[in-house]
Image 1 (cartoon, rainbow, N blue to C red):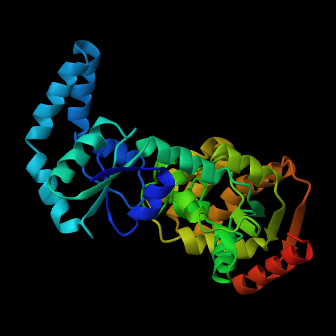
Image 2 (spheres, helix red, strand yellow; image 1 turned 180 degrees about the vertical axis):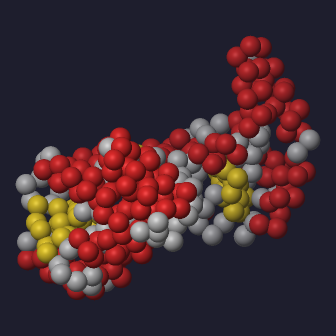
Image 3 (cartoon, one colour; image 1 turned 30 degrees about the horizontal axis):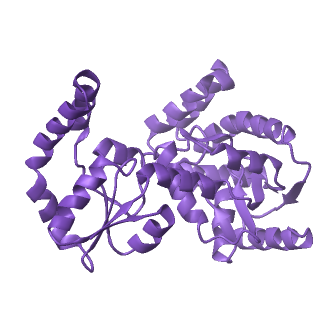
Length: 343
């Protein structure tokens, strides 16, 4: 039995079952359904060769070449699937729900499995993802200068049952020139969106959602334009912490990183710091004076943040001055203020 499913049906019914993404490993790495397993019908090189044959020799020659590749791997495909199947059901998709998923579905059905194919393939999933991100969320943006603990406040809000979008956590980046230090490689923008949409799925659109203030990019990852525009027009709660506390936070977060990594990050903003301040910051890092290096870089980041805040479209900008690095108290104060303001 082979059945076609819409994207909503596919996602609902495939939970807990083997879901095969039969696109090439390169396509899968660039972005995929989160619970899908990659079983390429054609690997990167084979897909390229078939594509060239299609353009130069036509569809039939490309199909014959594809059959040559697949014929040798059919038994391998079945052996891969056998130990992983639950309830005799297998879910399959390719890019557009065409020949690649159809071929795998035929093979697995021949072997006796119930096969469910995603209509429209991964392309339909991407449409679904962008629709999820474009929903009308009631955002509250948490702002504050570098070192203000915005991410920690977000996580504390989440602990208290608030709806939270942690863009930096999903993007594997803390947002500044130092943001990649000590973190895994970033996902592609496409897969970042896939992961973001999964985070949003259980949200109640009638309740507020907290999100950290960001530029259009988080490291090398771009924020979806619909979400970005919403962030620019939503209320901003600005956390104001004393400079010394911010310096302590930055030293704690980055002080144990390799000197070479810190020097490279500082060099990335050399043009903005100026030669003299850049050299002073590098000298401070080499002397293990991480607070001194942080203080120099904060001069640039603080000016940039103040300018960005002044350019925001929203007029609802509220400042919260805290004297202590107390995430519990800060989260409670923000929740209280949001309720008082009817947000």
